[in-house]
Image: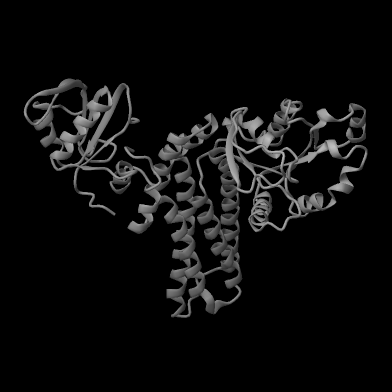
Length: 455
């Protein structure tokens, strides 16, 4: 981690031409910069319209300046913002002047990191800011805002408080046990553990639902080689992201895109076609396709309907259907290339619920597909945008819950109270890590390195 006592600068708006660019500075040298670049005193939280000077005293631009005096700023430090004209040359000139005065460029997320270290926000709220910036849907934005306002942190702190109280109870019982006094009442303790586990389950259920809101629903396009998967991918994406070729096995890598349907983000994943082959690269692609299909939220199984006439689809694709049902995969089957077939054969399949007659080439059935996708995920909307959650949060919550569950087993043995205390300590640490308490610098470096520069 870089030294966090020095003064940093960064462009907070996108680099390029525009109406306004904002250069943000945070640290102890803010007053020094005022004197050198503005040549006047600026008062906190008052908008000033100033000239910007170079070190020779020449005017380089004129714009708005806002000063936030510590600790009443985003970072908790003195913060100065230059709102200059949005030209590349102007920005470069101003940054060059600032850097020449002993200020360094900020690392990605460093302004937010400083805010975290000054206790302006916890780690959940810090991550919510990044999610807020990268939100692709209104539901994702709403979830991020709720976490930024502390809703998710509040739930975690309630769990953490309950775990901490249980740990104090157990450790106090251990101390008194040396005097043959047993304070720990097993029935009451089991009741408290059971109640706590129910609270964990509520948070986990909400977290799993809102994870789809924050990151999108993963839809995997799956099927035999040359069945029209890549054409479907391009149709849904409205651009050519997958290679379309008459030769089977063209798609060997995993290709990704995303679409928004009904305000919900859906991540599209085009996979290698399933077929018998001796090509090592293609075999590896097929293996990856199968692994990704198992983890999908929804599988679009594409079948070349033009090749099967009156044959029973269930017989032809028996292995694929077994694979889907065995792994309990949510799916929709697309009978693709139906534009090449006699429509009288449609009646053979009208009793299937999850079948859609489709043509990736003409777009026939596209609206019906979108409606069916939305129906399967109709629980995802702004009303259910409870809070922002990521894989790190969910993983730590599950680990913490497992440590709590272990406590019930150790209660059977009086001499295992020390282990009971250790399980509660581990549960406590995992919850603390979610909000950023007691974490190491290297851990913070990993988290904040994913942020955008200037935030």
